[in-house]
Length: 174
Image (cartoon, rainbow, N blue to C red; front, side, top):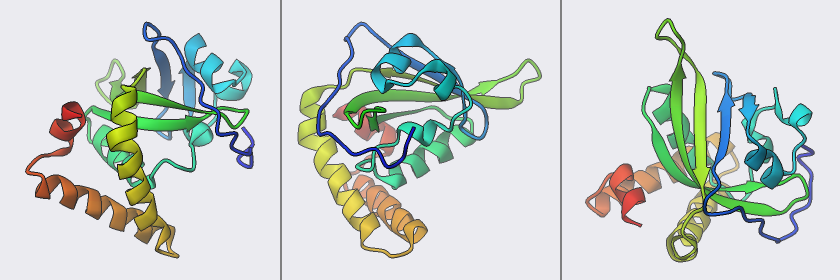
């Protein structure tokens, strides 16, 4: 995908009964993509396979959420997260993602698997958009992207602590 694709502001949707599925290697390169993923992302199979999953990263998605996601799945834990992605056209689409580590026959970590479903619109509008805007604001205040991501991550963890909860309880409570 061309990373300079202009955003259209148009939202793409998929059916409540549909599930987006992708698998990646340990570096996050796509090794499998189902037809729902290919359709919503507008990626041809040949362009998707072997490409980094970040190919569909939307600029409104806070990097600190991906930091949390990678920490969890690299440590062998699953994670659920609300994610905004970008299609090839510049349209966007929201998902409620469940990412898990994948293990080979030898028991070693060999990649990652993600299933995505349609998220609750009310949750996106009332909780996720404002939270992600706040986190992106923190990230953008820092010239050093890594420092910005780490500061936003710390702010997210502090919000959870102040709310007397952890990430998993939070994401399932909204």
